[in-house]
Image (cartoon, rainbow, N blue to C red; front, side):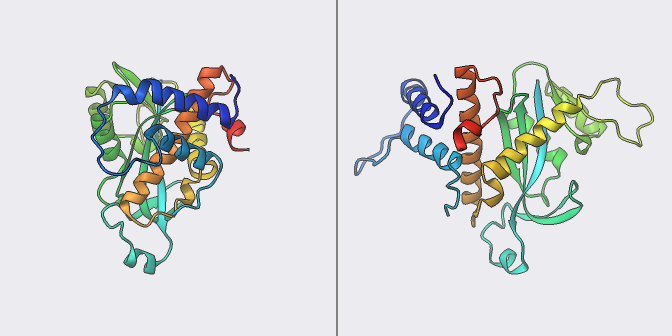
Length: 248
């Protein structure tokens, strides 16, 4: 097998058509025959992102803003009132209007769980705990590397009750730092995964105008990322999260 876009899409289509779709309950769809099968539609969605045709209308955890507007007029006219709100981007010391995306990934970049939420309704810690509860990223006790934004005795206790050990950098105001060695290189890796989603796969330019549109575009980017990593595992590529072979 080779690591190019044609090989990825062929392998993905065969896997979906032979293994994934037959194992699910398919609803009855009366009416005209479909122009695309489910497997073909998924492959088209993956190809669209990897080809950058995005002008269409152990675990790591981190959050990132998904900006949805840059003017008061956009906010007033938006149809994303249920999801988008004003929040603060601590990394860039700036306020934004949009949604907060929380990701939980493997060390190689595969997204295991994710959620979009209003930064006004849920802060990062509450959103992360809700995600761990409704979308368990792993079975059994699992360490999760995160940043200082998820610090807090109550948060760590709640995560431990769900079977997850939060590993994070030491805060300056902690009298006794946790007896854990923080793997800083893993923090850099999830930042790279977020950069891939937002820049290389175009989530920063999602152009969504509705809540449903933002969800579908976010799912499309995550699907493309996971499909590329899955194919890299199938062919034994040395860098599993590299998308260079598929989008150039």
